[in-house]
Image 1 (tube, one colour):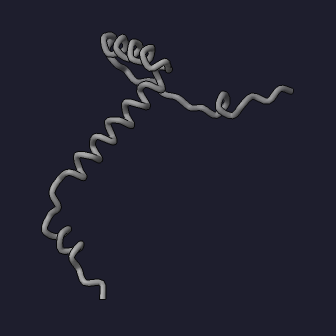
Image 2: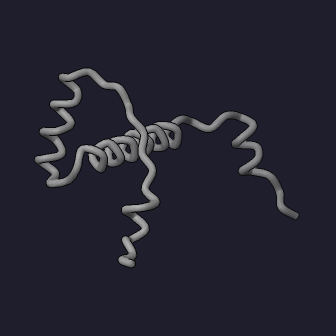
Amino acid sequence: MVELPCMLICMQSTSVRIDTATHERLKRLAEELNTTVGNTVSLAVKALRQDRVGADLSTPLRDDELAWLDADLG
């Protein structure tokens, strides 16, 4: 019996409905990045999440957050 790598057996997937134009842009971008459409989507999600975290970090702190940071530890 031949054992297949877990990635081939254990990998789960799902479908996402997108319009044809977006799919074409994804395919072109995947070709430019020399990767798959699925990996391109993963990279895009990661980049979007990083952008959101960056935006959150650039937001000025609230008064209660500033008070917590300035709290006396002793």
